[in-house]
Amino acid sequence: MYLNPASVEAALIACGAVVEATAAVLEGRLQRAACLVRPPGHHVEPDKAMGFGLFSNVAVGARHAQSLGAQRVLIVDFDVHHGNGTQKAFYDDSTVLFVSLHRHDNGSFYPLEPDAGMDYLGSGEGAGRNVNIPWAVRGKGIRNPPPGDADFAHAFSEIVIPVAKEFAPDMVFISAGFDSAFGDSMGGCQLTPAGYHHMVSALCALGTGRVVLALEGGYAITVACECMQACVLALLGEDMPADDAEEDLMGLGPGAPLSGPPAPCHSSLVEEARKRLQEI
Image 1 (cartoon, rainbow, N blue to C red):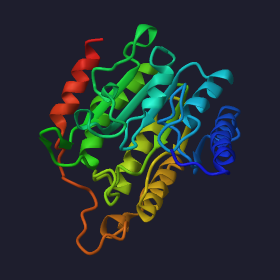
Image 2: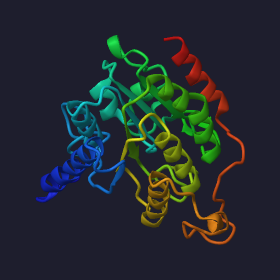
Image 3: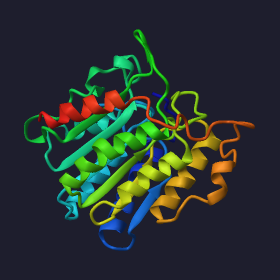
């Protein structure tokens, strides 16, 4: 944990912003909202602070949405790290569907816990309401290409969107971490602004279209700014600028890849996760 005398106030403001955005969307003042908040919250567990965070911003927002009448809440987390705190908040809850796409590396990637694996699908009434798509990139004998736009798009088409449509959420929350972006050395993945735009657009098309997006991780400032811009365009229902495919959006230099491999490299993992979910 990193704390200073202003940490609690900052965390209260961050969590309060998500709560206020949730109210604005459910009361019809907004259709969608983006919350540029820090500290993040998806690592914060019900009984302890963790991972730079003090309050689980999106989990609190989800409960507030339910207090305002939402019956079924979808939370999608595409931060490079598993949203362990969000998972634990709703693990046995049938009214919240939590989906996390993250690096796991068989438990050797932060938060270093086994429950980030694909076998953790919820318990009790919440069985089948917890979905982990755990990328395996490095560590413990693993050496695979980093997941990029094609891998995340494949996971969305095969798992995230079908499961979400079946769940039929009244409200969607997005834990938007940009440490999974190409150019963020902490995550070691290859998502681009176009990849984030694709995912957010797909989530906006669900159900009532009511969405609250909250910032989680992301530690390369220029990269995070470009990716957040793409997400906001998606929330507004706008396309990416046509010339973005030719621009070096992240300042990575001439010839920098902006879309990763053209085909998914982790399709077998996605298929295995889909099969595990079908067994529930």
